[in-house]
Length: 119
Image (cartoon, rainbow, N blue to C red; front, side):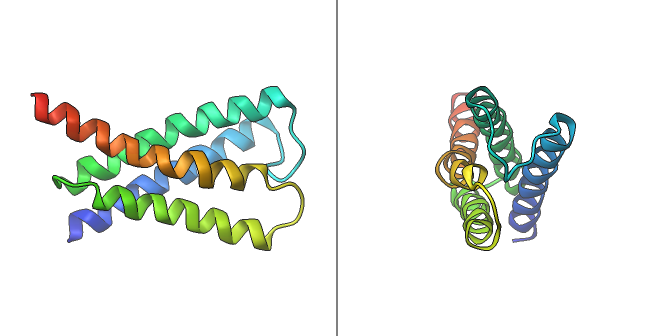
């Protein structure tokens, strides 16, 4: 149980840290109006980091199912939904977090499970 909680915590912390780092380094306001190019770059970067978050959560939890990843995805989508209703400005980052980043974090765990079955 401790490994599951730790996996979820580390996976989510990695996702949040890399997201904050991305927006701080880019100087883009996550609630501002991005260019199409920046929105696509954000979607690709966020998908990659959420995939790694899912890998980390699954690897740390060391389980043979995706329960940890479903919880991680629920937390990502849950906080994005909360932010969607509570923040001002454009909500593009919350929408891609709900519909892209959360599901991709499940794919990270699925990939790790499939890879470990072949080994």
